[in-house]
Image (tube, rainbow, N blue to C red):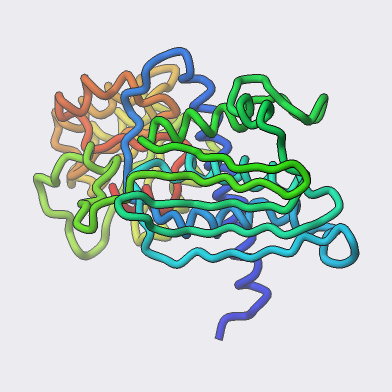
Length: 331
């Protein structure tokens, strides 16, 4: 039986990892805000899991210092599994997080917070209801305006504006009902995913394997000029059963590839390196037949969409930072 302390530590680390990945996704959206994004592929997202993740991520807001007394938050969550939409999980978590945090902030003296997930016809719904101070109609009419805030210096007026934009990009709407002194209900309505949706999502960019990967020992070459990335990615692959070799840059990788006698099962290379870039490494791998599969890692994949993948230099692109599950899907 697993030690409860170890299980608790693992769960807390998972929350930290999820928050870090979501934070990176938010930064990328800010960086991309002045151009049209072409690399944001939708996947199947369980809205109930989104809600459970958000309640974990926001626990410090609604639980810390509010367990007893007049400032307590009475929380109830009704999130049955299986309510699926097509979208980007990190973005939907950001939307629900903004709404939950606003609901908690509206109840400085405590109150009831109700969060629920439901299906209404072809729409999937997330309801967030609070018994806080509520809003007059003139405030409700402006809450999604950029830089509009009722929090003074404590708010920047961007949270709900960004949330509104995300929901619109997902083909949905946010509905607001509020009454001064009685609280607020916000409802996110999104198109429900068809029951037979393929759920390929971003993995649709992955080229089918042209050669079978041996079922016995799997060998991988990891290429990156950042020692910390090299170490972490290597450990992830080792945990998936790979025997890993490393190259600390493109030039070092070319030397290793030129001397290969048996193809690697996987070459995983960074894109932007100061000496030889990842596409040059991938081209050499392809020319020599040095790997069954080649994957490029990058913090900015938009320049690859029309080139490397269509030219079959690489089999997949992993956008940094990526999770173990994302790596497992393409490795």
